[in-house]
Image (cartoon, rainbow, N blue to C red; front, side):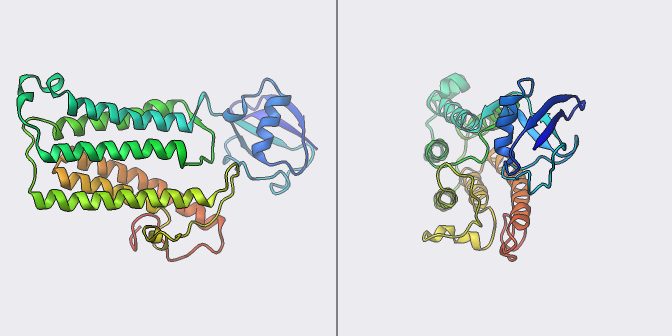
Length: 301
């Protein structure tokens, strides 16, 4: 059948495209760029039924959307794109460099005051920060499977500013010559909680990875596996976010650092927004989705 493709911004036609009736949106985007050279590249296309309508999913088929010969689809140009993996690597590598710069070269940051001996808590905090972001980098390379290949280029600058900026704020205080460590009991208890949440977060990421066979976009209801740390799936839809928030709150308690707590709360707010959206999508997509699950905080949200 033949579909006309228009610009969602001004309703100008890119042209008409003959396509199979059962083609899915993900394949259609590539076909549009192949046949209509004036159209944006596939990764920049967001296809809609109406100019201001909702973006269609890559898995939607024209048959399921009840499109017939002569119908129209609209393209919203998403602008310059960059790979998800590239963005993640940049936003996670930055904090490593920034934090370790404050930690290993304090004389550059604090001048003569840097002669003060670094506390054990500051050493532990540096190890925790390093482990966290090395873990994230390795997960990006070897664990995560992304539903979408790219994201808007502007996200690179926004995300890097957030992670790099907060890291500078936190590391300046924790590595400061005047930093006062809390009691050993508080430090070691919080360190144990931090390690537990890091292992929990990693366990959930592995479980999510195993839900999707390589090279596919299969979606399944997330469930616990043989790892007991994944049992949090029985209570929330996004336990990886729950563990992530727990890790940064633990880090804040371990260091008694207000900027670290601000970072934890800012992250908690954003992850709650993401978790609520994912939770709604799960319940909409899977009719048998467990009704007793919350989005991110057990029994609460």
